[in-house]
Image (cartoon, rainbow over the protein chains, first blue to last red):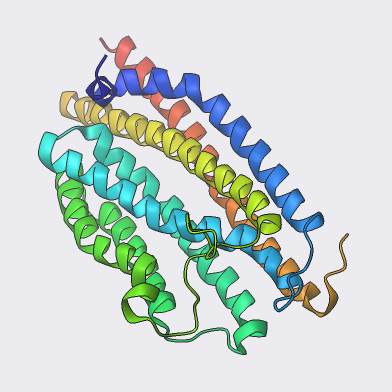
Length: 243
Length: 51
């Protein structure tokens, strides 16, 4: 069996409908368990006090903000090279999810930053690249809406996605590149010296799993919606041509 | 409810905004999905009737 079989819209729909209940269920379970664990059963941090509890939303949302764009990049490249409509529609379906994740990361970052840094916002490399990434998400969504021909829209948004990838990567590595600004380095790292203490780390992993599962469920569901919307547009066009 | 000390408003507002945004995202996705599904069923039915 080849992965390209799922480029067939019918095959994609039947497979995703079978998988979706599992993804919705596991996402809900991990999110509820991780957030309850993090919020109610972890201690305050010595320097940050109770604000450390924001990590369970801020870090998973920020991770997905970047990785949603990377997923869109892969789907856009598949569209540009192999012209599979499902991949273009999957990229379109993922954009609003990535935008919401970026918004959550920006808002929770500002709320967390105010008591810790004494400011809601700073033109720090990571914060600034995240804001630009959010604007790229809005531009990408607007471009899809603005163009009637779906293939032209897929072409142009794919090119925009390639350009925006620079900011998705900058958002991730800005702290390392410039080594300045208020934002600290990675909270999660394979280097045990670098990542947060285990008492925060384990519930954080559960929350990250929940966010990833929710992302997958939403992408599958929304891609199905885009496939149906495209089929409906084709049928309506045929109806108008026949009238 | 854990004692959040002087950061109560900070933590609760971060959770409130994030959870609200997630609920809106899931809700709107499901709402549009159902709407498109029923509209497509209607159009397919019409196409079948008209041959």
